Amino acid sequence: MNTASAVPGLGATLVAPQPLRQYALLADGERGVLVGPHGDHAWMCAPRWDSDAVFSTLIGGPGQYVVVPLARGVWGGYYEAGTLIWRSRWVTDDGVVTSREALAFPGDRHRAVVLRRIVAEHGTARMSVALQPGTDDGRQHLRGLAQEGEGVWCARVGDLWLRWSGCTGRLRGTEDGGRRLTTELTVGPDSCHDLVLEIGDRPLPARPPDPEETWRATEAAWHSAVPELRHTVAPADARHAYTVLRGLTASSGGMVASVTTSLPERAEEGRNYDYRYVWIRDQCYAGQAVAAVGATALLDDAVRFVTARLHQDGPRLAPAYTADGRTVPRERRLDLPGYPGGFDIVGNDVSTQFQLDVFGEALLLLGAAARQDRLDADGRRAVAIAADAIAQRWTEPDAGIWELRPQRWAHSRLICAAGLRAAAAQRILDGRSDDWLRLADRLVTYTADRCLHPSGRWQRSPGDTGLDGSLLLAAIRGAVPGDDPRTVATLGAYIRELTDDYFAYRFRHDERPLQEAEGAFLLCGFVTALAEHQQGREVEAFRWFERNRAACGPAGLYSEEYDIAQRQMRGNLPQAFVHALMLECAARLAGPWAGA
Image (cartoon, rainbow, N blue to C red):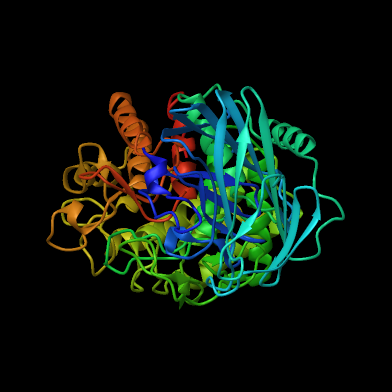
């Protein structure tokens, strides 16, 4: 990739959005950055996940932070194992240069610290640097720029405080009032240069952080937070998936579904959503996955967040919350072009929906915690709250797992049955287990009476005879046995009708070929791997696992969907629940099926 032609001069142009597979992730639990192949920080919200973006070229905004060689070169990159420390690497006409990138970890809720260390591996590195932050949809720019000391500059952008350290070259502002600051740096052979950018919602500390100390602390924190996972079938990828999940998990315990907003699932079809919030379902998937690998820290985080929301809202539990437990704001448009093929949407109308299955998923999560003796008194009370909510609301139509028009979806009721069985099996509350088992049986019987297709498989709802990938979860999670004829018939029909060369689709939208309606849904591909494993078909299970775990970019990140014709990622990036199911597969395929 010729970065010189893609970023001419940096003082006059913004870096264009790239295919999603080209981006890497930096995250510290409180916010994230997408790093592009031109050394560009193309997306970052600060100070928190759902704040305004300060870097926004990903969706056509003016904010960016670029560090790129001046010489012609070819880009690559990789993560340091068990961390979200990314190394962008260019082989140029002048030599080899890397930019080591990270957010200081663990993150501070009020202050982001962006670390960039330029290392000249071979030859002299001549780097072009540009900083152009903006907030309020790009309408608020740098103001009040002042030099604090040698190479240290301070400014405001919107309501935020900013400090940039390490700018030892001559700093230049553009003619439009200094909105973009540019400089050039020269790094000699076998030497390095640090840039540290701080962005906060309150006045910054008196002194900038020491780069060397901050790097050491960040490395140590990642190594302490991420287990080796050598007992899985794909240790390196499983560890990376765990690392991504940890990077998306805030100090509140809430794990955001994704870093980004508005990245289209299908060009110009209006399926553009803001996923910078905590979906209860996704949080439960992640908690069950880390329980499967025997890790406890992220399991405890998930239990803490879900338990707090159940105590807060009870039977009115929302499908999603902000990372600090607030209501998700309603959708609104920004005055930006959006990612190519998409729109500029922030906020999400999910809080207006009722999704019954989140109560079942919460019970599955809390049951997994109880199996590992990680459930306290608040957690046990949350089990009762979730079970009582199911008893109260299971007959109501709901939006279901895919957030569609309310119906009495089969998956919602079956996953609630699975959750009730999981809670009953752990005897979490004395005297309640038998009641929960009877309610689970009632849910399965109700669903069988109304959602059993004439062919013997499950169908989506009483009024929708179609197939759905979510229906495979009924047996995987224990609502019905793996050898139940309905389980076997559903899996067989699903593979015949909704998969293509070991990629899986959620459901059939219309009469178009599957790949024309939407991308392959990676979550469903990993769920199919688990379903085949449950049936004892190990070769098939591994085929599904390997096919879907390869559907990522060089940074090993997964989006929600995968366009198998163009081999491109679609939707927001990274998508947490895909990493969660990949991690669970890597753990569970390492041995015989162990039950729900």
